[in-house]
Amino acid sequence: MSDENGLDVLVIGGGVTGAGVALDAATRGLRTGIVEAQDWASGTSSRSSKLVHGGLRYLQMLDFRLVHEALTERDLLVTELAPHLVEPVSFLYPLENRVWERAYVGAGVALYDTLASVNGRRRRAMPIHRHLTRAGMAKKFPDLRHDAAIGAIRYWDAAVDDARLVLTLVRTAAQYGAMAANRTQVVELTHSPAGTVTGAVVEDLESGERHTIKAKRVINATGVWTEQTEALAEGEGGLRVLASKGVHLVVPREKIRGDVGLILQTEKSVLFVIPWSRYWIIGTTDTPFEHDPTHPVATAQDIDYILEHANAVLADPLTRDDIIGTYAGLRPLLQPGTKEGTSSAKVSREHTVASPAPGLTVVAGGKLTTYRVMAKDAVDFALGPRATALPSITDRIPLWGAEGLRAVKRRGRALAEKYGWTRAMFDHLIHRYGSGIAELLEAIEAQPDLARPLEHASAYLRAEIHFAATHEQVIHLEDVMLHRTRLVYEVADAGVAAADEIAQIVGDVLGWSDEHREREIASYRARVEADAAAAAAQSEPAAIEARAAAKDIAPMVPLTGADPAP
Image 1 (cartoon, rainbow, N blue to C red):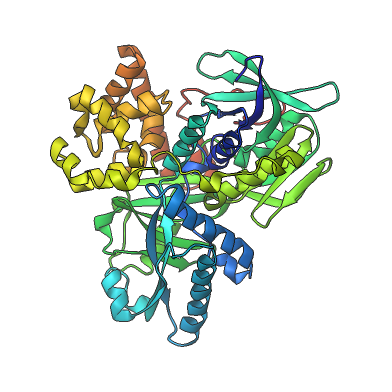
Image 2: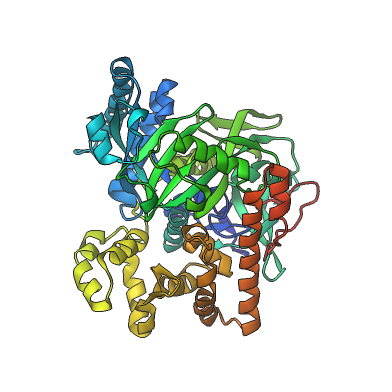
């Protein structure tokens, strides 16, 4: 990125929006680079509710355009762009009143389905909603308390492994020529004598080396770090973003009897009980967060709040012992208006694109589902009039692993028999890699022991860890535990028992010494212990203090006059 040629577009931020911007710019033929201060998807984009949805709540606000936009993006992902990653999932909306509520909610969900149908496609991506009696509801979700509802409406949305989506976007962008570097922090924006942003100085957090990247346009997609990154432009303009914390609990599937998800209204937020892989994800909270955004954590109070509201409708209440994992993420809530000095802005209800300084574009707000629209808007805005002659084509670019998916699925039985896999294991691999499973099979042919499951995390193959190290820019053990797999909250010990084997596989690829490998394992264990201590703390400050006991293995560089920025 730092050669004399420079870039057409430099993207700051490796979450779903930044990854989407990099793909959009690269597929327009622009010389594109993307940098992320930590690991890919290490912020909000690995800590979401894992939903790709239209947003039923926006119907209550009568924002039909926004719902239609999100539903169009949902269906595009399910049918064309990422059918291996994004899968349909149905939810029950429990009803307490036989007449007015069934009519009111039923009309809203019918409108939801109608807006999804107006997408120019010949067939629907999702089934039409259905009204269920109490008996029908009990069949779909036996553990819903009998007196919690008189019936329900079953409707469809979709779910995704959010971090896997980000990794796939970055990988797809790289296929089309984008250059990508994680653990690379922007520490300065460079300027021309006239004040135009001309690129950035970045620091490799592994080596400490600094590089200057020249770029015709810089796009800031740093989520809750938006204002810290804007400050590097040395101006007064920009967007205002506040952080809101959302906490989720992870519970094994056998702890709740049900084949579908639940959506429940609470006094503070919407509570989802989401079937996800071999687990249930239950959340979320919605509380202001005014601390360092690098390490949000779940507190005992957060956990109790979610348990209380979930248990209000579950026939067999959950206890803390049933929880195998928790995670906390920060939503970047876009505030109305822009700061003084912002030259122009493009505003929707969900996201805004603005230019706080010439040469710098900022995009903030939005949600996982509409990342592609946000990316298109950001690149259009950065290009200005040139965008008309160089339009976005990402609505027609399948993500890595999508092409040839049907053909690979047909080989499922033969591959499972050859390598001794269950059908569930093959489905797991297809859901994560799609047709890209061919690259894992090449490694297995060269090293047959990679076909075995991990000894202490049998849901994953050794080949997946090897692939993460060879193809997915893993630098540290925690990259595998948190983002290439989700072992940090998929098993009760946060994957600590599997850490030795995983570190051995990764270390063999990356050339780690025994000392280096032990240091990586110790760092991860310290992180797990700190997260557990935070989850036992009653207050936010106490939880933050407990989490701070674990030092970052590649800490970000403090910026003069600002909090650490990605």
